[in-house]
Length: 317
Image 1 (cartoon, helix red, strand yellow):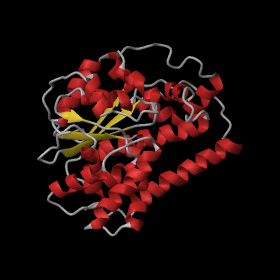
Image 2 (cartoon, rainbow, N blue to C red; image 1 turned 60 degrees about the vertical axis):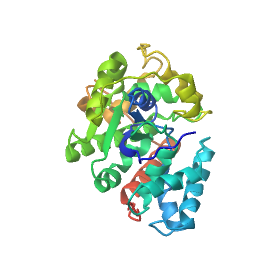
Image 3 (tube, rainbow, N blue to C red; image 1 turned 90 degrees about the vertical axis):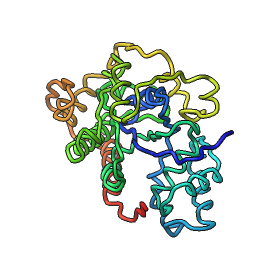
Image 4 (cartoon, helix red, strand yellow; image 1 turned 120 degrees about the horizontal axis):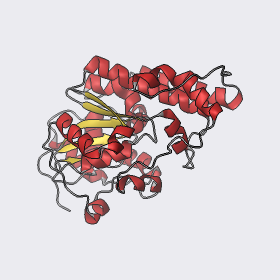
């Protein structure tokens, strides 16, 4: 496999509530001939653990050690990369090897050597926006939004999905509020928010908008079988993502099968923010608060989200 001689730059992130169309956006970005977005790493979920294990900035043998630790967490998800390639990427960057350099080098090690503009797609990026956009000059984010009723329905089609409407509503609300805050504070030049429904309706226009946002030519290239085999967009066990590589067309009925009680919960929790993105929530009527497992799930997510916001030990550079 050939290696790049000049370091590719990690210029953007893709995020949004899981099952919102982030993999489709990843695919459309990879069809731009100068851009690549490898499998999602969930790197930042393990960032504080890395800083507890290694002194940053990384030096000497700690570089390969940290790369191997990232690989260990990534391999649990079925991912793979060569730790030695990550170290080679770090060596190409004329800066201290902080968390951002390690992250960028992992992404570069999983990307084709002829793609100079890199992105990374992990849904939770939207919840790390303050840490990442605030620390990395010029970093951009594409946030993907989808009707929460369709998101709930989609979650119920995968084994790991969130089927509880209260818990799903809490997650959806947090992601969309984060995108609104990020766009307000960093502006449309650095935060592009797109609706999944609009991307599906006119993928060509969406792809053109992505090229303009990233400052690259709108020059499209096919994702060949050989290219995908060498540089997959997602891990082998993530078979539910394979639909994003198929023809892009609206299937219709995305919210069919979502009960009236589920719709009422989503409207009650998310209604105002749904309206901000052009979704008609309707009148939820009287909705009981979450109880039992639903209440515990909501509380657990709130604790996790608060911990992400409060993270301070991030040695970015």
